[in-house]
Length: 286
Ligand SMILES: Nc1ncnc2c1ncn2[C@@H]1O[C@H](COP(=O)(O)OP(=O)(O)OP(=O)(O)O)[C@@H](O)[C@H]1O
Image 1 (tube, rainbow, N blue to C red):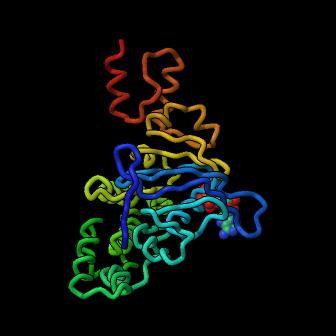
Image 2 (cartoon, helix red, strand yellow; image 1 turned 60 degrees about the horizontal axis):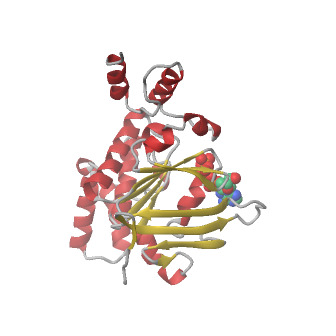
């Protein structure tokens, strides 16, 4: 398979979305309405946006589950509209959805993770290696003989992620993987995602409604009515508190507090999203 990566800034481009338009069969309106987006190799990208803004539809474009009506999506130089390449593309871009129960197929954790590699027809030693490495990557090694239904929501989601990792993708697209979890489960899943990105250099595209998760990104895009309306680092995005609210999104509570203190005339920068930093600023305020 010919693999090339195109240069974008310092990192290499992995996925390129150009002039993308999409509507579902019975819809009059474009659900994706002219999207342009480069996703770099090793990047942690978060997508946020109001309900129905097109986030999940865009996610499904990134590994060819849906293909554009107009425009293109390239993964490592292959177009998702090229059906001969779709298998390669799906292996390179793995998807994780909201409900892990819909993704777990076997009665034992390690069998579930072996399912994908078995379907690739790999040697059993290679399958064993992939299962062990994938479980280790999400800190679930000790649960390999468990039945998935005996795991917590966060543990199940980490097993679902491990199942995708066993296919050795370059990029993970996670569509609200923490939406059904309690705070402990959410943190365990976010820790695993961070480790994959920072430790193993995996490209992450993470869709979420939780702004505390969005601030962990390298870059955030904000979607509204099928368009990208804001794009930048967490600091760029959350320093625009009024604009974020216009798009019916929350800002992290600590940022809102800093913003209101700033509006009241205190010498506090309005773009703080870290509690310790705000405490520090308040303590040293003259
Ligand atoms: N299979 C489908 N058939 C027809 N319309 C659809 C389908 N899936 C989504 N839509 C519509 O497309 C629009 C965008 O939906 P999408 O799920 O991509 O948004 P979203 O930003 O992910 O929303 P949410 O945050 O609620 O998950 C919505 O108006 C939705 O009703």
